[in-house]
Amino acid sequence: MNSLAGFLRENARWVAGGFLLTFFSSYGQTFFISLSAGHIRAEYGLSHGGFGALYMVATLASALTLPQIGKLVDRWSVVQTVWLTVAMLALACISMALSASIVMLAVTIYFLRLFGQGMMSHIAMTAMGKWFAAQRGRAVSISAIGVNLGEASFPFLFVFLAGALGWRNAWYVAALTLAVIAMPAIQMAMRVERTPRSGDAPERARAVRDWTRTETLRDPLFHIMMAGVLAPPFIGTTIFFHQVYLVELRGWSLEAFAASFTLMSACVVIFALITGYLVDRFSAVRLLPVYLVPLALACFVLAMFEGQWSAFAFMALLGVSYGFSTTLTGALWPELYGTANLGSIRSLIVALMVFSTALGPGITGFLIDAGVPYPSQIFAMSLYCVVCVAAMAVASRVALARNAG
Image 1: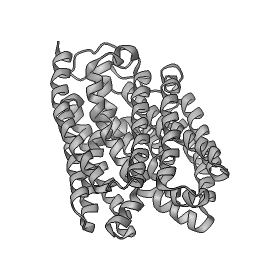
Image 2 (image 1 turned 90 degrees about the vertical axis):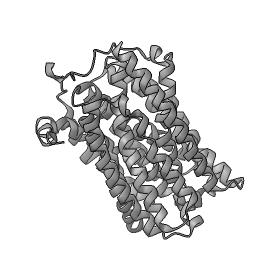
Image 3 (image 1 turned 180 degrees about the vertical axis):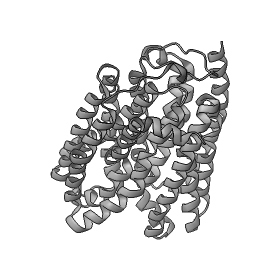
Image 4 (image 1 turned 180 degrees about the horizontal axis):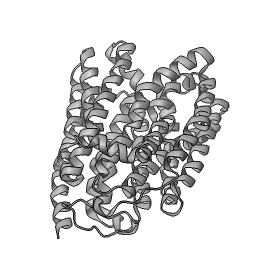
């Protein structure tokens, strides 16, 4: 960790660009969109399950589109893809402010998810994966925590603006920040692309051949790893989407629950940076067996305990797991499948992650409407994580043996 300051001095512009991409991806993340959920349900007369279904369909559509658009990162410059993505995300924010029908709302959420959660994060992680080698873990970890700063700041800002200006006008402000702040700042930071230096390759690593996306899909190890990689976005999105229902169910203070987000964000930042150092030291593949353990514990605590303290314990453990996963999922795929087709491969992975975030709110919303206890659903998520921990341990050993062969 001692070399972090030196790393930032040498690479500040590139990691700042990655950080800003993930920071402004917040406008397409569930935690931000769900801040308008109460207003949307009230204006359109939607139940929890109804809005969850609409959200699921729109997000699934974005996941199906992402593998095609995501390939642009391998063909265009980063700046070109940033211009397209930020412009489309700004238009989606304006569309949310103007939405007047369920169809328009669904299309709006589709574009928010595709260009916000999908492309903004995809560009950042693909660029860091291609531009860095020995210090890839640090680059990914610093870039990835942008969304956590967004989680810590945007909910308060949006609630304040929605109270002062109305929730629709708050979305206009979001579009304005993308045009006035995000676009020029990211372009300035990333207009000159970084080329990994000859001394960048880590001594512990053998040269990894560049897989195509088709070859990757045929690799059994890929599917085993994805079972674990998809757990954090699925679970986190599900909890955040139904956060108001959870607070009402437990009888918690909404203000106290909102305060727990700050604790989670702090844990994410700390453990993302720690994981970045560990990835550069040991490799992402070696860390696979441990990163879902905190998530399993987090779900267990939330399912089994009702005191307000359990919300803070859950958020802290979720933050630890998110810190691990945000860095690992950015550094893992170049280690396994090379960098030549990284944009194409990552776009598929991000699409699957978006797909998982679509399933969570939809499935749990229907189960809630059907009378299935929400704590029981969360406990099932904990059991799933335990199974994935065992699977990741096996996958890690197989991957290490393959890379060494």
